[in-house]
Length: 64
Ligand code: F3S
Image 1 (tube, rainbow, N blue to C red):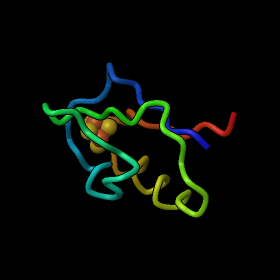
Image 2: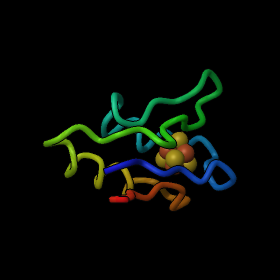
Image 3: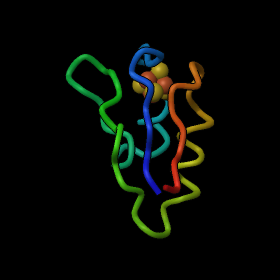
């Protein structure tokens, strides 16, 4: 499972980071750099919580 971030939608709310900082790292300006990151086994639920926390719907999970 992979994290996909639409950087055109990310406005830096950091709610994803608040849910799971190691899964949803931010750049120095507070924008997500989680795009393409693999979700480690057992972290799927936290990844999903991060997805749902984003008010801009900028994050999704991919299983391909
Ligand atoms: Fe960006 Fe959404 Fe996270 S706006 S910093 S992807 S909560």
